[in-house]
Amino acid sequence: MFAQPIVPRRTFCQTVSPVLRREMSEKNTNCEPGSDVKGPPYDFISQKLTPTTMLIFAHIFAGALLGLGFWHLTNERRAVILCIIGSIIPDLIDKPLGLIFPSALGSGRTVFHTLVIVLIVLLCVFILFQSKSWLLGGGLVSALLLHQLLDEMWTLPANWFWPFLGAFQGHMIQDYIGFYFWREITNPIEWLCMIGTVVILVKTYYYKESSVAMVG
Image: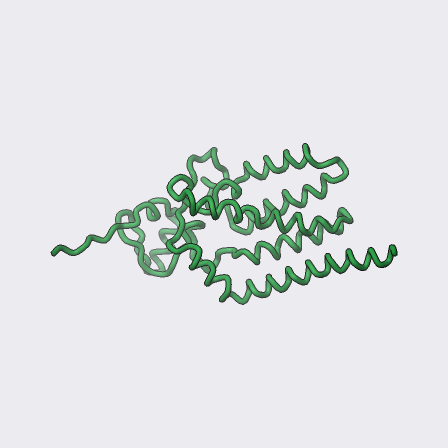
């Protein structure tokens, strides 16, 4: 009998910064408090237009490139794997946590996207790694920090400097898994990053095999 009222997405609009709100206004996107969000899709995690979001294989490829540098510094090919792990572990942990506890954490850029976790991992490296392997462990820490920089976490200071600026901000978008899966398989840059990562891993394995053959 009565039309269903539109439920405003106040939680998103109220966490949008004034700068982003002006950008949304320029793109004919209404995000005033108490109004519904219309216009192009927005990433509720980074609160930026989705085309700028760093996707998973881009992170992995960046970690692999960083690993090549630490391999050269330490003469340890394990640096490549450690840097890849460090470059992807923030998403492997925070994204599921954001999906499981959306009301508590709010988004997929929370605990492992903070500078506090970088300091904690750095402390663990000094404790668990032997002095000769500190530089190798530094690759893991550097990859973790690189992930945060590529995600431009300074644009979400409450999360990056948590807990000093209050609670986590941001919200998971609807159908998060389906939305980003489609973006992964349709983004040509992601395919190039995946191929580049495979090349680096093959090079790492080939170096191992060739070294064993030369010793034999």
